[in-house]
Image 1 (spheres, rainbow, N blue to C red):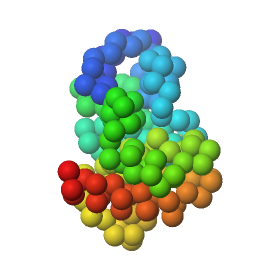
Image 2 (tube, rainbow, N blue to C red):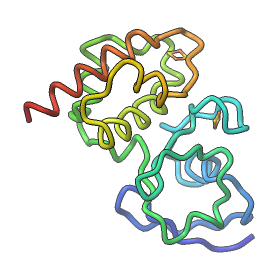
Image 3 (cartoon, protein in one colour):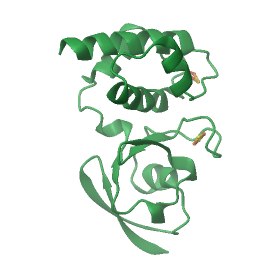
Image 4 (cartoon, rainbow, N blue to C red):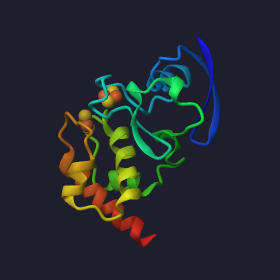
Length: 154
Ligand code: FES
Ligand code: FES
């Protein structure tokens, strides 16, 4: 066990963990941030997606020892009142079904829109590699386009 200081959503957190413990475990089990989900555990499904120094990161395969001195952002830090345009667009387009994949989808969509403010369907399909067993992909696309319009008007 080792002590680590992590900067998450702008706040400093002290945790004691095995250096190889994946960030997802630290977030959920040590810090009670359960918005990021465990799906596959092998970096494929994207349910555990967070941002690290702006990059989309699958936290289930990222050891805590590699997370110090990084700017970690989770779904909990997106807004305090579900007011982020991507969250609003998700609600308007009724994207979530079971909801399990959705925090990862939203984190990936936010990163996509920062990089590409008006993405085409092809760009969305190429970038949004998160898996959804409920098949929400068409709604995800619509919501990303809606969020892009909202962000352009803001
Ligand atoms: S749980 Fe991390 S990618 Fe599936
Ligand atoms: S909404 Fe159910 S897995 Fe995506």
